[in-house]
Amino acid sequence: MGKHNIEKYSIPFRLLLHWGKPFHDCLYSRVHVFNKPKKIKHPHIYASNHQNALMDAIALIFAVNRMQVFLARSDIFKKPFIAAMLYQIKILPIFRIRDGFENLKNNDEVFENSVRVLNYPRTLSMFAEGSHAGYKHLRPLQKGFARIAFQAIEDRDNSGPFYIVPIGLEYEHYEKFGTEQIVNFGEPFEISEYYETYKESPAQGLTDLRDRLSEEIKKLIIHIDSKKWYYLILRLTDWNRTMLRGKNEKALNIFKSNQKLASKLSGLEDDDKGATELEQKCQTLDKLLVRSKLNVNEIATKNNILKNILILAICLPLLVISLPALALFGWIFFLVRDIVNKKIKDPQFRTSVRFAIYIILSILFAFIISLLALFLISWKAYLISLVAIVVTSVIGLKIVPFYKKIILRLKTGILHLFGHKRTKEIINLRDEIFEQIIHINR
Image 1: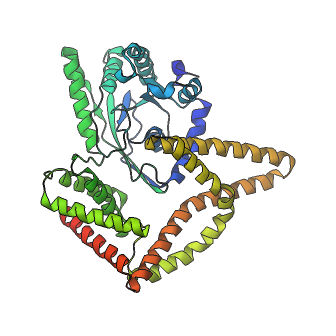
Image 2 (image 1 turned 90 degrees about the horizontal axis):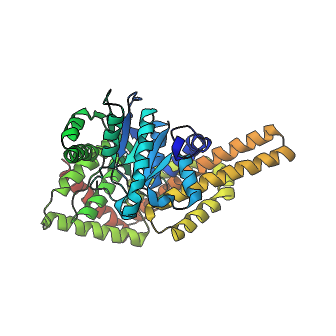
Image 3 (image 1 turned 90 degrees about the vertical axis):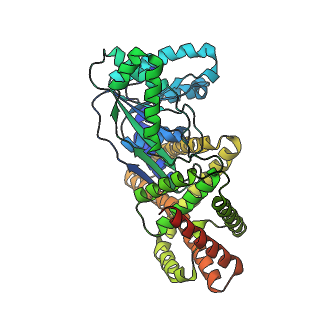
């Protein structure tokens, strides 16, 4: 199965859909899907921002849990084997000017395949920025999605509605294991009004539709629109998330709070004195945390000591249960991580490569265990052992990072109780910055 019948289901795609989801969910502490739309019966395009390489496509696949066909930059299709696998998981190449003018003619075939997918009908998913970048800022959108949409309308003689579904993808951290992911769906909008403009002036129609989508996606992400204060805003939104989690706020409320915070701070002048002072405080706190090998969410006061001891005691049986699986596979997890980090220079591609490797290794492991079951153990023992391994592995992936965080919270609480100078300084400075975040976001 290749690009000429990419709209049909394939075994690798079914395998990804059903086998890959548990691995995907284990990479993140939580995956939040906001405003998931009902199935749209008319032709439509999912159009998203692009921050984290192939993990963005994986996020959309599991968020809607049904087949989509994606368009991705052509340079990842250079090796025939990789290209064949990408076709199997429903990804088509699209060519950009940077790929060479001589290759742009190949987009004619891409557009034809895309229109066929839309008319099948299947969902066509596109990352409208054209390339990925690890920034919480929506870059200028490309017009490829609009060209395909208008071409699909013309192919159908403008019979019936055609929708664009804006989507915002958000990551707490692009590489770090055990963080949160957000897939935020916007309201679908029909593009017939833009098609009328397009018929009169193609350039204007493409521009108007692109601008509309850009505004819609900005509503669905944390859009930091300041070069001067970008890293300050990024740090404050991270810490605001930590603060609100401590108050047990819902994920959607935390996201909206960070949107509001980013919007307010993006409007600051480059020479704002208050922002300069706040940035200095954040830099001081960062240095103290690095010296103490801590994160903001690992800091607790002396008032939390008994609470953290109780949490450790309650979670200890789960940690013990997961130890055999961790001993069997933990070293593989860290070995793959270290090798990928050394070999892959693009940070946004590392999670994608690790995810693919983990799935391949799990399939090989399941195959080997199945062979052993044929000759060494009964099928009943095989099924019991397989379920036990899967369950204890998942528990281990979830409990170990959590247990580590609670131990560090207990440590900082004890240090604070005994008046440790640096710990006290960290807590006081953190609380001062948190108060300023609250004041800004009122």
